[in-house]
Image (cartoon, rainbow, N blue to C red; front, side, top):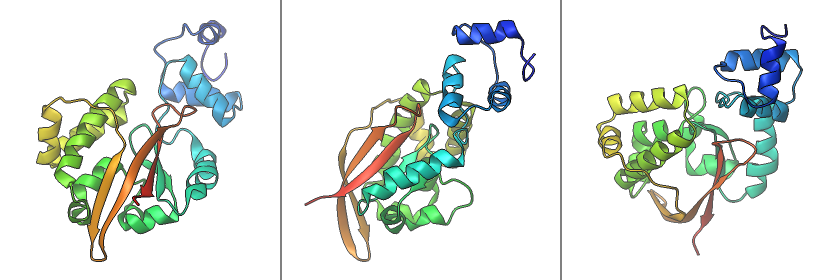
Length: 213
């Protein structure tokens, strides 16, 4: 026995035939086998289980911070995990959206958009953005289902009528690059809005803003 699982189950796992395993069991197995971050993600893939939002650990977030988002300065950039929590962001992103550094715990894109009054006036198309995010997250959740994602939807539907109405519409949409416009006391700023999938981390993406003009 290893970490509470039998040899026959480990054999089925290696062959991609294991099922009905929890994230807790996989975590215990990863610790027992002293797996690295990429090896741990591969273990989840073999078991057809999505890792929890914090499952990649601080080391991976630090690497993304240094190698990815910081290297994109002076363009604002951040990384979203599979439930759209912001894993890391660079200094220009914090200057564009200061609210991300004022919340307790990992900021979440949907919660920030819906719960932050300052963003309602800052986003010139806030209502349209709520509908876009709802339709994109519905498609995303179908591809990368998780208990955390389902709980997030339930929370936001109960607390925010705009999101509840958009979710009831049952629309689905892929992300499409577009020009985002933001209004503040300093005037209006326009950015090209891009989102890139991160293949090594299923359901994760990097979001980048590049100035228009």
